[in-house]
Image 1 (tube, rainbow, N blue to C red):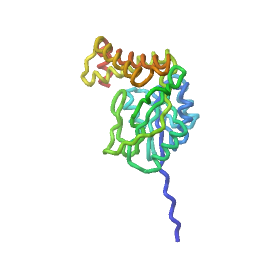
Image 2: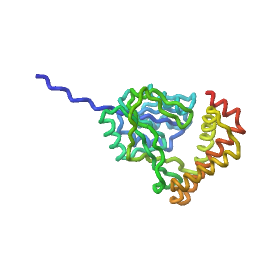
Image 3: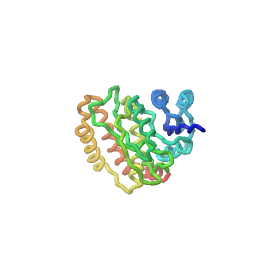
Image 4: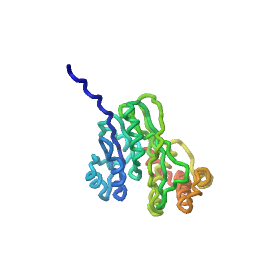
Length: 264
């Protein structure tokens, strides 16, 4: 009598987008080492991000023709061979409790999407007294996920409707390690965010930016409780508000550049 074969365990792939992430990629990929496959999609790093990722066992693919986060995440799908896929950013780390929760989710074999939440780390301090951010779908059954749409703050497009679950454990998000780095990130996200809003037909301007920036600052600083985190909490809220303000300013005063980016 032939002994029945043991059922195979569902496999997990983790996809990471990078651009000049040499200072953070080691911690990110170490936290992803429990996955069956790690794919790095690099947008043309000038530092040794790709070399570091390769040494840590990731499959590295170079796609320097940047067309937005949605296109880069979709490209990652072409390189994945696993049953499930988790999308991770280079400034994020998966804690041991979250690793265990992800393993349980994929062991279920469920065709679903899972949301994740962040604990922010900014300016040398974990902002643990803030309300968690995120709630973004990051874990999917690979065959269900068709693509991502959007230049920035991209959204998953699924082949059919599935239940949406929430992972209770949080990602550690090193979003703003320094003021200088935050200023550089501000410029990038202002341009991408303005292009997204321009494509939606939204209008810009200084007054509109001031109003929306103030609303965002109050939401983050008061309602998300950044005020409980001292100076780092204030800086965090201020940078989020500045990003909002300059998106609307760019829509009005950098219209040609914004429209060109939106057409890509």
